[in-house]
Length: 435
Image (tube, rainbow, N blue to C red; front, side, top):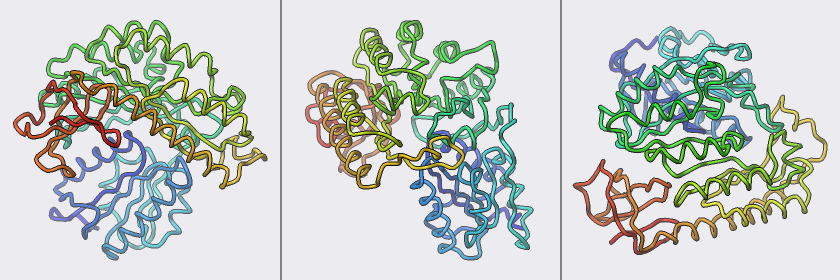
């Protein structure tokens, strides 16, 4: 048992912003009990690894983090939590050094699990999430980011896309009560935060289980909170962005003109096979509405390559659609089998060499599109939330515009934590510079 008010605990977080929020919640639980939070690279008494399992690569990174923790301190308690644990508890328990395995609904018990551990056997605290219908309320009272805070508004997903393991490891949609969200947002405003990022596993589904709220109603309520100057939405499902949603959201000036909308494929045949519930035509119409209503909108996306059965023609259609849409930034990832998903049973898998080549081509296109988008802001006034001193550039600060362009500004150290208006004069590697 640890139960030492001077014990050191270190965290490693893999995956999405929702995991980042969950890690911050666990950090706060340990801090309340008197633990000291230390860097993951240092020697600690407890290591907590918050895992991701979206791809095989994510699994591998989780295993590497476990090995790193054991190397840092072979005597430490190693607790592995999150999505990979939920999916493959026995696999993780077989790894050297692992002491505690907890899934996606046990994070609120993490300190008790650590303090009750006696080294006699590995603890498996993973429980079934399939019938979990309540949001696990674990608010964060002491955010540690300087100017931008992540706020979790829901968990779970009920979409069951053919390739995605998330509904199996996170369970069904559970929305957080709006009164609790508003309370945490007000606390963040009082603490001096200027921007809040709303996150969750599938925030487009927010409120479907509450029956009296939806995402638009929530952000409309949050819009009135004094002190909060920016509201930013996490990843969105294209189906959320109806003409009505876009028209009403565009009238909320605090809502950032940055929409991350997952495309996944530019081939209607592949979209159908993925069990995505829209067509490229519908996606294109949505993009047109956004650009009609939202000035200087940034449209970022995720695109998968190498989905089973993806032909050369399908991929060329994706390249063309991405180029025609002129996304401001794309995240490219390669399909990998996830146990229990329907796509894992498909026989027409794509070879690694083909996936690598397609990924390379799409990333190159994405880099060109990003440069074009960012370059358009040279010589134009932009508002930047000055977040931190730049590590890479001497005598500079850095921050982001409302449409999520990174900006490096010479001096202005007295403006940290504030929103300033500047005129960029240069773009380099997708970053704007102000002299």
